[in-house]
Image (cartoon, rainbow, N blue to C red; front, side, top):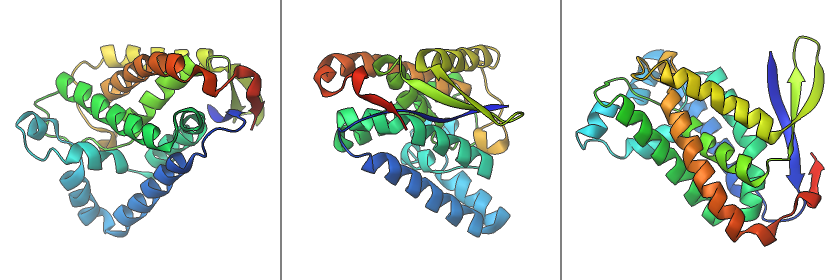
Length: 229
């Protein structure tokens, strides 16, 4: 198996306080969730996870935000936080913490909206930060297509680099292929399934915003300032 473990980072710019803060918040909430035990932990996830049927009915709209900070298992949390750690800091360095936080939260809302549209009558709660993180990845693809993503090949413990445009392009192709094959998802991420259309929706949102950001913040960064982390 292969996993991304790093990327080229911008020298200077805004400090990624929000990016790292989001990771800390997600970890703390996950630890609290598992501290409740399996039964009450499940109740907690059902209470604060996004249930498409309820949102479509206009109920529990607050869960569109709270669900972004919930995770159903260690691998779910670790995977999301790894991608957030790798891709978010460059975006925040250019946008600034305030605008990055707004961008992140709206990206999560947009991703949830797309997921709900594809399965609006589902009563299964959806949790996870992956929709918002997908938005970050979409923007990263547009703003830093030549940045190198450091990959580790676990079988041989070897590392190598691939351009962001290749890594993220293949990632999105996988999401799109899986999403088309699961137009009506049968389960949410905490139940072992994957909300593919949340990933797709978030990524497309990120692509659009990335194009706008690249035009507006072009003077804030340069590819010549990228060094390996």
